[in-house]
Length: 181
Length: 259
Image (cartoon, rainbow over all chains, first blue to last red; front, side, top):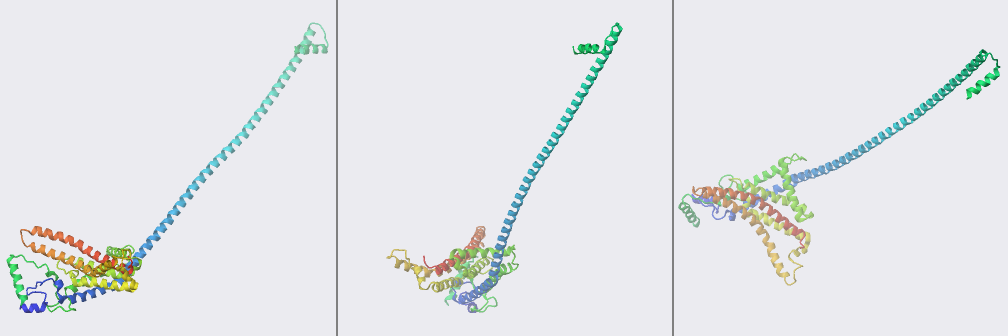
């Protein structure tokens, strides 16, 4: 029986199925290992070089392309955003300047109107004052005339009452002389 | 009948140790998948099975994982992309721009070793990269391809790799001899490094597992298994990386033999 097992398993295994020496050095098995190794290596090589490696290489290239594109797009968007920000800042500054200009214009307009109105008011005031002064002068003249007339009449009456007679010319001269004094 | 006597001797030794059974190398035995017949070169064996599982795992990660071709990757696709980027950058950095067209070959080597190493860490699995025949095919394959490539690309000036033109004239022939020897040792060290690391790690795991049968030391043995397993997880990745980067270095020597 031992001989049978020995024949079946080759020269490298004992009757109990244990290795005799190193199985690595058993010449009977080497051709088998080499054959199946070559088969496996050829299979791996064809599967890798025909299917897997081109596919993975394409995926990696596509990914790096996508990443590059995305970074470029992000850069572009960032530039656009900063441009928009600059435009906004500029618009803000412009609007502020415009507002300041409008305020200054309005102020100037109001000032001009105010000046005109003030002048007009001053002129009116001056006109009224002159008118009033004229009226006062007229009233005073009227009063003086009335007083003179009354004085002449009174003097004539007085002279007549005292029995004298005097002509109108003398009395007028005398009254005028007194009025001046 | 020398074989038979040896068998009896081993059996008695096992008995003498009282239940302690060490067969740390049995895990490397090549068995036919179907039946008990002899192992011919074409017989589907456990080597075939685990190489096939590695192939399926590679297809799962790289073909099924990337079938969506998503710009935003799924988890599986990003694993594939990380490995792709890692190896692509390594090839580009070490060999330069003109080495990039050999990237699929180097990727094939790396993936086979990486997946075989990691799948071998599953319990009950088989580790094809621990077999010297497998790693020798890989190592000598790289050596032969790189040497032919060097002569095709550079003609006789490829031999300038061995001639240190900036060394003193007296030393140049001696250095050339050393360089030639070291050049021919490359595939040996290249393949034994990988097989040795993986085999030693798995054998040590089995030895600790054997000690775990002894009640007295089993806590220590199980802790040892855990620790060695952690180390082996590192070794599996590092050996795949080392094999690949050395391949890149040899390829660089073939493309740019001038020192």
